[in-house]
Length: 199
Image 1 (tube, rainbow, N blue to C red):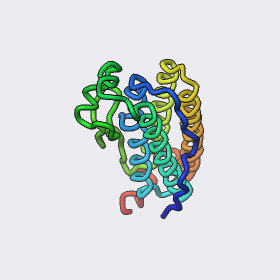
Image 2: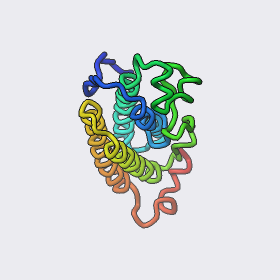
Image 3: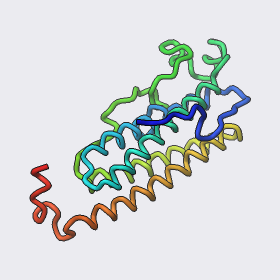
């Protein structure tokens, strides 16, 4: 259960419309390394996580990723709100407009639709936490790439905030991985922990 505070985690106030930027930033809305994949990954993995602190972390970060999904959606919407079909065509967003008009739809910058195959949930605590750390680094790299393409400070500042949160999440997952591996027999978890298979 969550208590929803009806405000963005970081304010989004974009004054200049730019569908070209929206077309690339949408990758963090529904791309393979975006916020939708992250939230779904972590909120799915928490159920099989045997370490309760790590399970709580997955829940907390998964919930925060939903807030980031909302922020990226606000960025994309503010970059395109009020643009005409002709302006969207001129700025390379005409194919998106044909299928979705002004609606937000989960896709990568390439136009590839979101798919659950973008993330993994194995049920193995070490595997899943390594997956999570890699996912945070891939998201950080995507934000780095976006920052290389964006000059508008109204867009850059929330993107920088989101990038920083990826770094913090990576660090928290690293701490959780150390806690989880401390709980395991470091010589060979599966050979020395047969109870794992009986859960």
